[in-house]
Image (cartoon, rainbow, N blue to C red; front, side):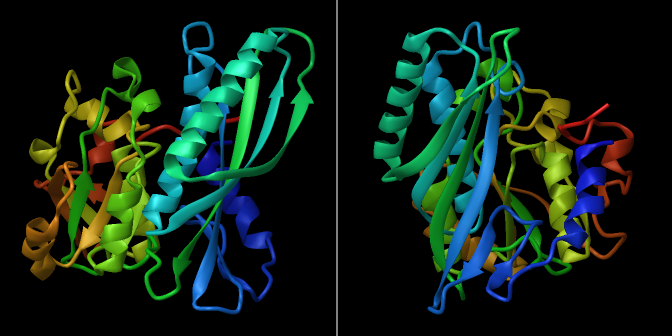
Length: 301
């Protein structure tokens, strides 16, 4: 069963406490704590030889990637990241690897102002040397500023930060910068009607925006901001770009561009349209999934 199919079966049965403002299905969960702010919570993992090549990737970069991919989820909600907890499991006998991992995590946490305030360490069964790291990120956002995946309306434009494609080969998937300041700006100034970070692929994450907002989308594949060496197919389906993908009211795009003070580039790549929720078309109204891989899904066989 694929990841999406499994979650569709499991998630509806999870009962939520009244304090859960937003449960499973967005970049973060959001919890009401009796104030005007929400507690944001997300968890993500890195698994050796899936999210990184363990024979060639320095442990410091593995740790930084784990933290940064979680920070990207906070950015997609327009929030401020503050705390994190780490769970690490491994059968790696090399103490130097662990020392380098924790040093890399410490330096990355200091860079982004994150308090590493707890965690757990466990062993994996003997066999092929491997590691699994899971990190929980916690942050906050004002209730009236939180960016969800569900706020787009027909006619909104689809905008993306940065460049897309060729992430693994270029090592962007290790060296990226989570768009925390950009996400916060979009939330504080009311530009992002709906937002997600691109972790599993532009096409798949566009589908998620469409499903949550009850709309279809059109993407102009000739306008995609390609990373060096990337093809259109890679930009649509590779994933691990960790860029922000968001809806903007068409009347607000000029103001957004004029107020955008970041080096990170912005590109309008399409629009939201009436149609079967989650369908994504090119400008000739051909479904992009008919010709391109949609993105990365974890599967269990």
